[in-house]
Length: 503
Image 1 (spheres, rainbow, N blue to C red):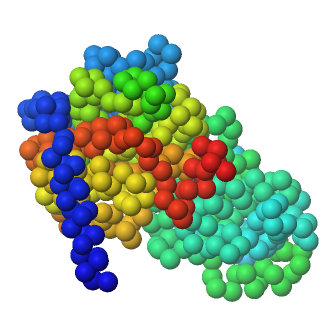
Image 2: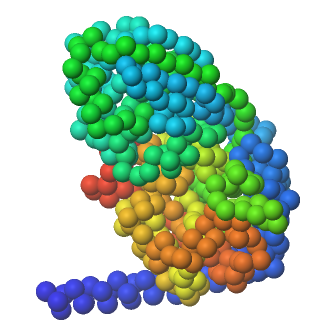
C-alpha cells in the first residue's frame, strides 16, 4: 500500500511539473511591473481614501478608479452603459434609550438590556415566556400555538430549537421579531446565553450597523436581548398569565444610503465556451476612520488604510483584468469589485441576488481576499480540494516559485467569511485565493484591521508575485476544457445541482 501511494505521489508530482513547464512564459503576467503595482497600493491604501468605508467618499473614489481602469482595458460595462451596480443600503443603530420592567426587576438600555431594533414604543403589558419563540411550518413547530401573546411582551430563550450555537442565535435575530409580531406580541426579548462577554455582544450589535435595504424595516415591534439572573425563567413560568411588566424604547435609528459594485465583462475567445463566464471578485471597501474602524487608534494615526485587506486583492483583480485584456481567455470573464464586505458581504450578496449575468452561466467564482500574510513563500487556497481546480492553482503558484498552503486556520471558517460564500450559497463553485498564512499569527494581528496596515509596510516584491500567481491561476481555470464543479459531499453541491439543473 505504501509503495502504491508513493508511486501515485510521483505521478502527480511529475504531472504538475510537466503542466508548469508547458505554461507560456510570454503571457502578460510574466511581465508585471512591481513599481506600477506599488503605485496602485500607495493610492488605494492612502490616507486620502480615509479607509474606504462603504458609502463614504473614499470608498466611492476607489470604486470610480476601478471603473476607469476597466474602461481603459476595454471591458464592456456590466450594467447597461455603466460599470457600476448600485447597492441600496440601510444604516441602523440601536435605540438610545430603552427600558424593560418585569415584576420588580428593571433592565435599562446598554445596561442589562440591549434593544436592537423596532420603532419608538411604550407599553404596559404582561410579560410571558414563549420558550424559543420559534415557528417552523416545515416541522409544524410553533411555540405560540398554546399561548396567547396578543398585546403582551414576550421573553424567549436565545437561539432556535435544536441550535443554541452562535449560528442559531443569529438565525433567531433575523427572524424572531416577525414571528412574535405575527402572533400579536408588542415586544420580544431573548435571554442572553452566548459564551462570550455580554459587554462585547452589546458593543458589536449595539452600535451602528449596515445592511442591504430590501425596502422594509427590520422589525415592527421592539426586539432585543436581556441579561437576567438564573432564577428568571422559573419566576416567569410560575404564573401562566405571566408577570406584570412594561417597556419603552426610543426607537431604532434608520438612515437609507447606497454604495456600488464595479464590474466589466471581457468576451472569451472560444466559440464553444464564451457563453460560460468566470467571475473574478475582490472587495475594495475597508472599515474607515477612528471609532468606525473598531480597533485602536491615536490622534496621530486614526485611518485604517486596509493595504492588506483588501487593496492587495483589488490590485490583483486589476492586474489580472489588464493581463486578460492583452491575452483573453477561452471563457468570458466578469471582473467584479464588490463593496460592503466588511459590513457583512453586502456587495457580493446583492450581486448574487441580482446578477447582471445569469448565475447559471457563471461557472466559477475566483475570489481574492485576506487578513494579510506571514509566509511570503506561498499563497493560501481557501476551499482546497472542493471544486477540482487545485492542479491549476498549484501550477500557477509553482510558476512563480510559490507553494500552496491549503486551508490555513481551519478553525476560523474562512471559506464562509469572504465574498466567495455569496456565490457558493447559490451553487456557483467558488473559493478564495489569499496571501500566504500559517494561521492567525501575531504577524497577522499586528496589521489585521489596524491603523498599521498601510502601504509602507507592504512587501512590494511579494505583491507582484502574488498578482502573478493569482492571474495565471485564474487564466488556467478559465481555459480548462471542463468546468469546475463541487466534489461529491460538499455542502454546496446540492445548491449547485439545483442551479445548473443537474438533478
